[in-house]
Image (cartoon, rainbow, N blue to C red; front, side, top):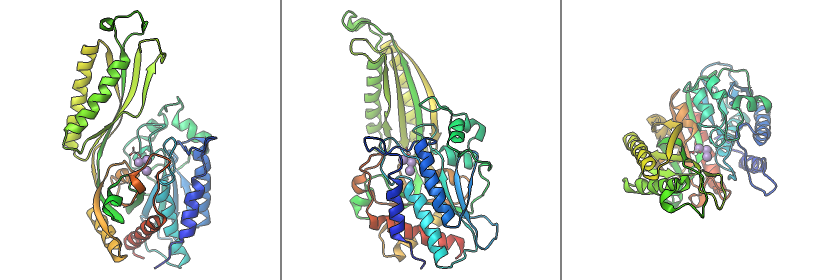
Length: 408
Ligand code: GLV
Ligand code: MN
Ligand code: MN
Ligand code: MN
């Protein structure tokens, strides 16, 4: 078996984790930022060193092709993303990109010529923190959003994605989707507690839950905190707080599969002695079942109407992202299970709670994902960690599955 160079793979993960640290030591590489540019530059350099033909498409997806047999046929693609959330860990995204690179290098070093080419993708703006929706680069790549519309997306900081990509030198010439993959396999850290809790080494991800993102704006009226009787207030902050509490109760009241999060909440004018005139908050709803997710959205819309009446506020909603649950390719899921078992690793089929580029690529070609355990189930947090042995085992399973798909 062509050996994964574990020291190089882990060393690169550590090196990438140093790119985008602020003066407090926090790692943040938001999409199309200066830090993202620096991370991309380093990874593109490693891809070229590995002999890949590196291209960038119009939405900034960085894609390397290794076609040593010169077949020009559809490649087996691996990939993930290099952008991060704010104050991030080191593994979300980078693991899949760097493991893919390690797989190609292993084959190359062993002198193996895959009959089907291999490709490696680092997709733009997977996290969706700076620009919505999340998985934006892979969504455009798969034809789910016109590139012009995606480039015009305005970020949370008022920037325009297309301008920022041009500024960092990653508004490439290729049409998104220019390489149509034969298949797509993504290694990712689980970002949840299941594998570690149950002592399982590998997750064979067979599906991924639906995601609904909305921004809710509540307008009340600013007034004096000391002089305005409680009965005469139009307090946007109170309405927002009631909504946050309702979301938690509604999620809990389901069968335990729905989750709801308010990750951003801003009050205006944001002063101690002024009744909030306005609240802007984000709502992230997820559920593996399409019907339950739609029911939750309908209940939320009803709750917002009622809240507007009860609290004498106006409520407007802007949809930021909406992705249905995705079922991955059964053949690749079986191949992941078989590869793990052949290496003596315990394996479990599972559902992904997080969004991933693989869910977009599944629109284009057979796709599936490999999960490795997250220590303590922690992610989107600087304490995010996966044991080195688990990372290397994941890369080896990726290698074995990709070798099967590419026929080498
Ligand atoms: C992206 O990481 C998401 O699942 O929110
Ligand atoms: Mn990720
Ligand atoms: Mn993430
Ligand atoms: Mn994600």
